[in-house]
Length: 113
Length: 114
Image 1 (cartoon, rainbow over the protein chains, first blue to last red):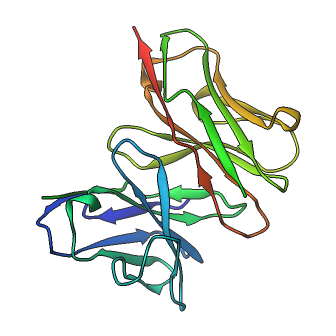
Image 2: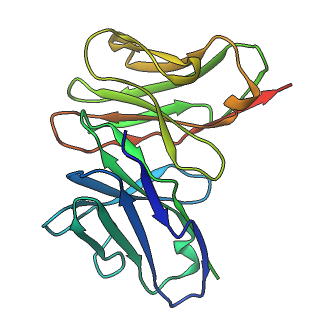
């Protein structure tokens, strides 16, 4: 399976600022996904990122708040913009390796004060 | 529309006892079913999956799950719990066919008592 890394692993940010999270995969993948996991809750899909096209956002998530880049087949970034304490979550990237099986990065733990 | 229900947000077992984590799903098409585990401060790790074929699937760390279409269930079991099994477990369902819409259950936290 693909090896996925994320940076930063955790951060504490002030409200109103933005944070960009990086996701690096050790092999080329077509589809990458960004999820949010709020404290004590399950995963919610933010968007699907395909290389060479605009990200597809799920209901409740908008590009202005969560801009995503996918410059190549091994890398993606998610920015959390104009943060508020409600954005405190774990943000996870994942890749699909066939049969809709997803492999996840270690996550970025974000605390917004 | 798909949905996943995990029965019990917390399950506690003694070390060496049977582990049973329950998952029921709803899907309008034959589903792909998954169990993931999340250890503290880590991402999700795939335990096992069912797509087609044999309904009893074996995964890592001694876990297995059985797809029962008549019961719309995909319960996760392990004959003998180990302290290292303490974690959060997520059941997930996907419709397959390239739709890439995986729905995750709410999760079940497994506690293992010495």
